[in-house]
Length: 158
Image (cartoon, rainbow, N blue to C red; front, side, top):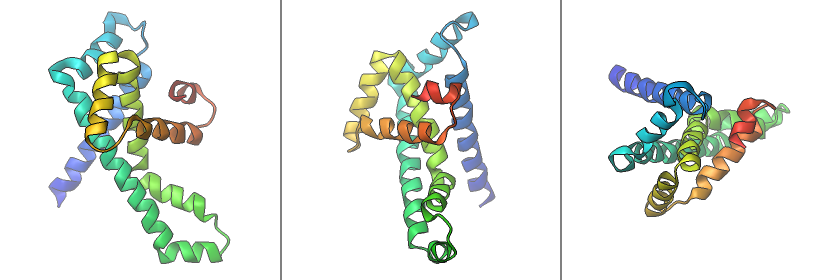
């Protein structure tokens, strides 16, 4: 149980670190940092893209389940009766259930796809093989941007 919590925390931290790198390393960064990060997604037959896709779909599913479970819960019924905005409460459940990490993995994949045609084609093909599509990433980014206040972060996502 403790090992599982530790692994989940490591996964969460890895996603947050990768998101921060893709967000803050500009194309004109010193020491070719942007290109060097991008190469990581292309090397080993786009292995990093594959893992990010797995995580993206995993957290998308977890977020959807968390939102669905909230709407079906007694807490949602009680919240509605007390005048709480249940749509907002469901969004909170969705974000805590995996939506935040889903949004961040979408942003990471977006970085790879925008700056590498090879990654874009690979991601598109892999999503298709998994019965999904690039629309999942686009919708995740749109939802993420809608949650952000006007800022540099929001303009990057858009």
